Amino acid sequence: MRIESAFIADHVEVDPTTGTLDVQSGFQNYVKVPNLPFRHVVGLAIVVQIAFDEYDHSFRLAIDVERVDDRPVMHHEEFTFEIPHGIGAMDGISHH
Image (cartoon, rainbow, N blue to C red; front, side):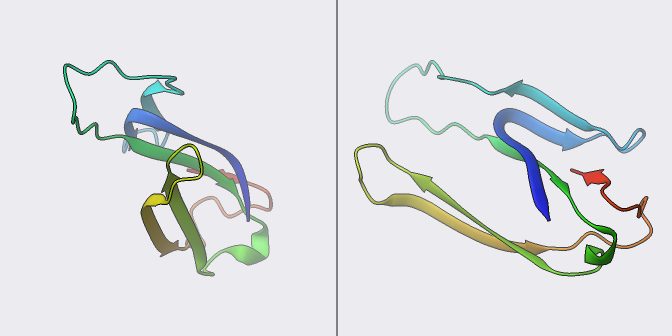
């Protein structure tokens, strides 16, 4: 598996009619907030490329949200996923 691109956005979803990735307000440098503390919900969009023999295999992805200045990790999340065979299974195809 190879991660082609990944970015944080205000809104991330897959359009069920076209199967395309819909992203709004991606690649933000900053967010204006009315006051602190403030909770801002974001989504993570990832596009991966897999080889033909990698379908139906589990992949593990770990994500850490870090602070600046060598401070501890604020949030850690791990999950597994697989891309089932039969959804356009061709060598080198991209999936989101």
